[in-house]
Length: 300
Image 1 (cartoon, rainbow, N blue to C red):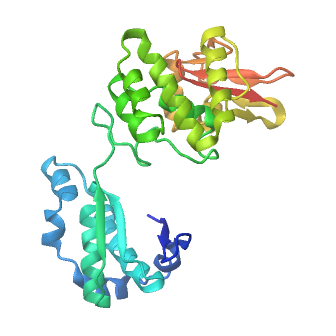
Image 2 (cartoon, one colour; image 1 turned 180 degrees about the vertical axis):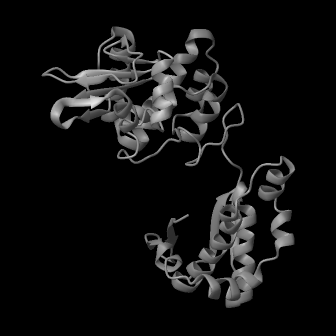
């Protein structure tokens, strides 16, 4: 629910980062409903595509989700009041929320503000690329190590390679056209070029090269490269289920147990099917793998 907003002023470097908890944390429920809620029409809110599609599909829409558009609209009002924000940008799925903020700001503050939306970036199978999607890619290395970032682009679907090369790299268009034309096994060269170029932009050429070399050693030589994400275990002992969740390979203990039962989890390339398995680390690090694409190092 809470967001950080980057707002820009008149100067080329005049940017301010604000946190909407500064005003949302101070709201009192009854006064908020009385003063802000009166400006929102339930009929109009139900007309927005984001709500209509859910209702048409008979999907659950919680009261929390329904109130989100009111809170986002209020964010626009507060950004206008506090830092003079005049334009809110977002994906096309945010159109209704942004319009609500425009109307609220006009009604309450008498200010004219604007919204700009762009089409959502989706994969070839229609999946949304965003932070709410499972497996979303993060630019911050604290959220997603450079190696995992490289692997994200390396695992791009064949049908997306050319489009992603144009969107997420600065490679020359003639080079992209050449890579896009590759067929069969050659498409893997295009995927590696995408991964190298995208990782170079986000993390630098050295991190991209290290990630590529780690992938080569991991998948071609069967060894563990230096750039794999590493988890240091205090005391040298950790349960396999916990290791999977802490490494981010599984979203929950239940998912970790399912993956183990399916035979998808390996330690040093040896499949482990016992969810109660305890990993005991000696002086040698251990490679933890989930499937063919997720690898990490456990050490003490």
